[in-house]
Structures are given as C-alpha cells and as structure tokens.
Amino acid sequence: MGRQIPLAMVEDDETRFLDFLRGHADIRIFQSFADSSDALLMDAFAPRGRGQHSYLIWNVAFPWTPTFKQSQTGEWYVSNSGVAPLVQYTRHRFATEDRLSYGRLYWAKTFAAPDGVDYDLDAFDKWFTQIASWVRRHGKKKAGDLHGMYFLPEAFTTQTDGPG
Image 1 (cartoon, rainbow, N blue to C red):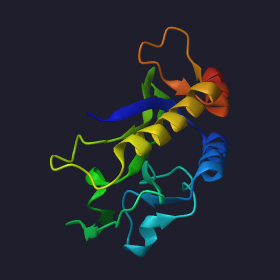
Image 2 (image 1 turned 90 degrees about the vertical axis):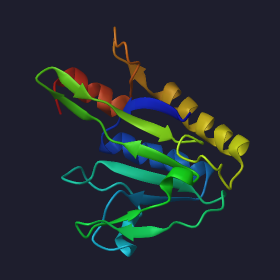
Image 3 (image 1 turned 60 degrees about the vertical axis):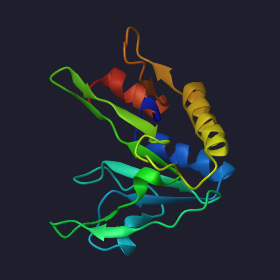
Image 4 (image 1 turned 180 degrees about the horizontal axis):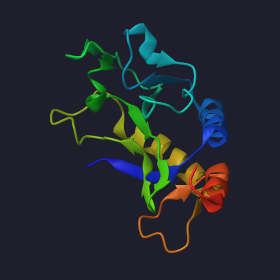
C-alpha cells in the first residue's frame, strides 16, 4: 500500500515547499502531461490553470530512468511512474458549493509494483517521512476536518477568507 498526506498549498506555499525539498535533496519535477517528452521536465510547479493539476517529484539520489510515452490524444507522460521513486503532488481546488477538492502528496510504494521496485524502499520511506513531517510542522488543520487535510500557511489564510 502507498503512503499519502492530504494538503492544500497555494503558490507561495508551493515555493516554500520546493525550497525545503531542494534544501534536502537534488530533485526533478515532471508535469503529468505535455506536448513533448522534453516539456515534461520542469523547474517548478506551473501557475495554476487548465492541465496544471498533478506533478511527479523525483529525488535523484534514488536511481531510476523515466520512460516516456504518448497518449492517444498526443500528450506525453511518464509511463513508468508506478514503480519509480517518486512523490506525486496533486493540487487541491478550493471550495465550490461548500465542497473542497483535496490535494495530496502520495508515494505509491509497492502498490503499483507487483514485481517490486529497484530502489531502496527503507531509504525512500525515510525521505517521504521527512516530507510529511515538514508538512505537519508547517500546516494547520481546519477545525472539525475529518479528513485531516493540512493547509500550509498561505492556503490556510486563503481558505479562511473564502474560496480561492
């Protein structure tokens, strides 16, 4: 089974999060889909917009060779992410009609790898735990939130001011 932590971040929070990650690891960021395989690799998360919903974060200390494929619609994606040493970041969307779309950091672990993985699970687990601890230290939970989503500081301010 994988591991995850639900969270909400806005642009300033995402910048601080990437600063934290880069302060502890050499990382690469892939967007979910792009017009070319080269365009999948990014320096940072793109401004929010259509198609800018999910990212893969790779700590290059864990050996892996990404494989790229093209979908039927012509978009490129990382096809071997299920067995890779990656943390997936999915952005939340603020409430519409009193409903919030939860974001998360997720590591598939061995969930999508029935034949196992080719990287050190224990070491990656420690890295994911370090990330989750940072989120818990810097995030706040909304009172009565049964799902336990962590709002990082700017997202917390935005959600208490109203939908963003």
